[in-house]
Amino acid sequence: MINIDEIGRICDKFNCKYTTGSLLKDYTTFRIGGKCTLLIDVTSSEAAVELIGYIRINDVKYAIIGRGSNILAADKGFDGVLLHLGSGFSAVEINGTTIRTEAGASLADVCKKAQRAGLSGMENLYGIPGSVGGGLYMNAGAYGSEMKDVVVSAEYIDENGRICEISAEDMDLSYRHSIFSERNCIITSVTFELTEGNPDSIKEAMAECMQKRISKQPLEFPSAGSTFKRPVGSYASLLIEQCGLKGMSVGGAQVSEKHSGFVINKGGATCSDVLELCRKVREIVQEKTGYSLELEPIIFE
Image (cartoon, rainbow, N blue to C red; front, side, top):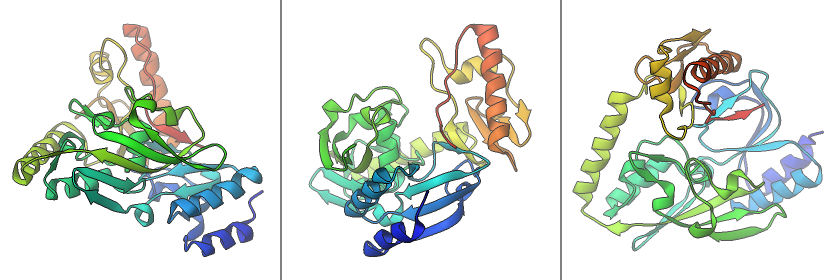
């Protein structure tokens, strides 16, 4: 049972805005999802610690959301507390070649700040639509680069409500995986170590990276990015295309005709539409190729 008055007092203490009945479609890049019982815009690590402490002690259902770029939210919504790490939790500090940023910062914005400071190493991460915390959670990457290539440490709230620090070596970073995906922790800040470079050259590399995205990916439609993880020995998009599934639709959800690795919201798609389409794609790919595709987005329900 959510006691909104008690949680509200904690929110007021830390100037955290909170709302009831917010639509998850407004907080996800898929533009899908029903109402959330209570959504809180977290403003600091201290606020997160106190909120998490209350939520866990009172056995309240909760989840964490950043920029919602790798989430498929249920049509019925989320009956619990959603801690939103967004613009109010996005401070960025640059000290020499080191960048420390709060978890809610946009990864693309951090890439821009690095470029302006003449710091190289994040060029291929530019354009990934998620937050820094979400990017580290899944070890986001593109065009041969991953978060693990530039992250040196992070702070997080552990299962006991303590703020802890962890080095990149202990994060078990691999393809779309980190230790955080196995533990009930909350990433609060991330520290990057970059190298000095020419701002103009870095900017050019970032522009080339973005142009690749624009030319190859269906950015004009809402989606959660790549819908399926890359199976060992092949590529999801290749397998889907080989099975003739480009353009396949269920309701408002469609396998993109531009990039078959993306399931997109063509307009009015529901979570049920997306899940049914993905089920059909996985079934056909398994039957025709023997490969078992795994969904990449996290499902909120």
